[in-house]
Image 1: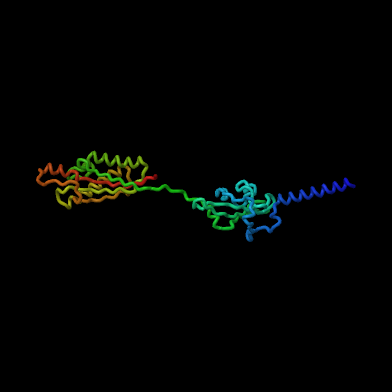
Image 2: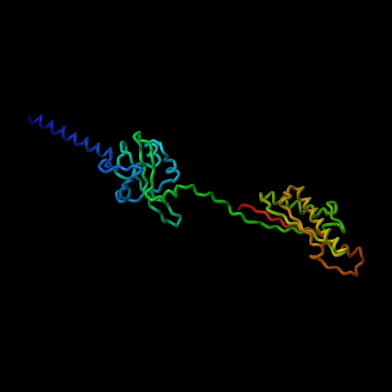
Length: 278
């Protein structure tokens, strides 16, 4: 009789242990009302298994999509943060923290995953909808672009021959300076935004002719730069005539010496504006 009672007691105790384990395994969530997508129930944050919410990788949260198996959710987000159980329950709750970008300040957010009868994700929810913004892709940082202005003045030994404006009248030093400038910009992997070419003339001759001559010299420099690979639509030209001389020479000089003295005024300047990423 005692043996029978002992066996009966052992059976009752084993049944109690099994029931307790089953309750724990399925989660205490069965003891409360379940959430639906239309009627969400949120546990108190203080009831979480974590003293402080987790800091998730937003990329993992973005991977939690409808029809994703529960096991995949567990791999991405780990176990739920409340005593809801793991297997037969159809909702998991989490407490996540997100840095706000203001020092060490962070926002605590509650997140819920609902599963269908096949234990696949049916929907996901934030208690505070603003928390969803933390999942947005951060815009890529565009390198700061600093415009670099380079002023190249072509006036060594007289850029153009007297009364000349064609490419053959552009002296070798001038062509070399232009070519080196274009190459240095390309070598620095800089992008040319604009080139402004201004032609000039000396004071000898008729003023109206000198204005046209200065513009023709600017056009010649533009033609040469295009040949070096500078886009024509980036180049603007202007003629200043005799309005901006570099040197002043006495009219008492013999004609030949006066022409030589005024050579620096027969020039073209090219202002290159380019930008280069730091």
